Image (cartoon, rainbow over all chains, first blue to last red; front, side, top):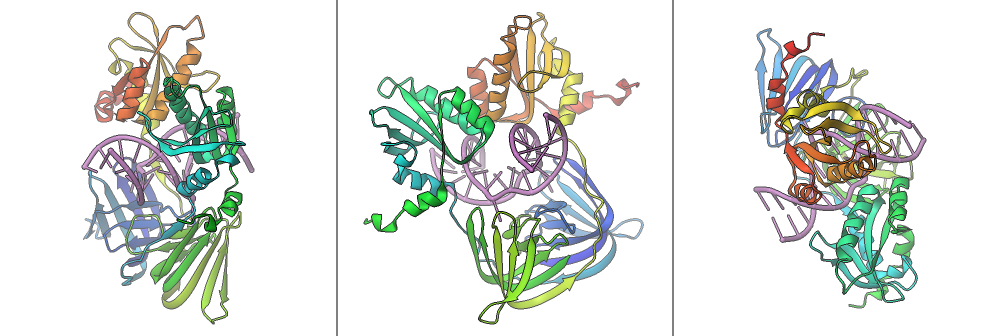
Length: 224
Length: 224
DNA sequence: CGATCTATGTCGGCT
DNA sequence: AGCCGACGTAGATCG
């Protein structure tokens, strides 16, 4: 990893064209050749960058200025014109053991599969990832009356999810063995537009309390 | 901007929980307090981070180790346990003038508005951003027979875009002055699922060659 | 390898 | 400020 702080101007040409006027920035050159151009603000996204695989060539322009030309695949090019170097160091970091994540949406599906009644009283699970021609339904359940209920689970409930569930319901309701199938749209948070659309289509919205579900998920229940 | 290279262990708790085992990494602390943890590979995305607004407190654990606690909004917390500092410098970058982009997809709409016949023979433009109650239709056109044609433009044509155009068409076809309105789904690239859904709904797919259109867009045509 | 889905998405534009 | 759509989306998972 090489870290350079320099006054520089950056031009990118690839899927779009972008330009950064001359200013002082941090340049990171990673071991795989990828390059990041960071300013002193914003978020984790660099002002500009080149993803691996790519190659950096250090050259000199006709004016005698140092210029880095980073070429990626598909004719992507990043040109960095260096005006003044304030800092330039290299560091051996070694391989990173990598990030361990915990607690995302697959987990939410597992919890709801274990506690379907938290979505509606008496709801029982038929199966997870119930297959259809256009993709798997997250949960297929039965209500107290024995009618089929398709559940679509999202971390954040937006309009896409309602459309998705609508397509499933339309397909499932063509099957006389299942029909009528009603839908439940479950998410930790449901956007107003999504709720309106769902309600308009007769789909029930269920806001899921992840922490409460996790609390219900007593590990001692799992004896196998 | 402070740049630290150190052996460190990182733990994040917020919308999810994540952990990075002890290893050597680069830590960037930006002027706004945001923190980035980078390894020597991957892409421009850090292994872990905290977005502004946030605050860094440098402390010492009971074991006597240096620990940074970065707190964001909504109880997001990033704990960085520092084992050994290899490098630690600060740099004054000043404000960045910012990125200038030269757009892709607004331009695509402009080009298609100038050359609607590239979507279908004899197609002529009625107006761009044709207003409806649920949002503007990218292009409203008429075909050779004088019938209305609604065009939805995307850079990448996916299922969402077909849904969007479907909603427009449903609404537009309620207007007896316009009906029947047919749809064209135009994009530089159309995903198979989107194509299937569009076709099933009687929507025509049009793959747009951006470079060819740009070639047709002779600047001398614009005399004003 | 391609298709689909998620994301601590981030970012910009608009109401 | 909140909502919505685009992104040089990137990354993971699965057929």
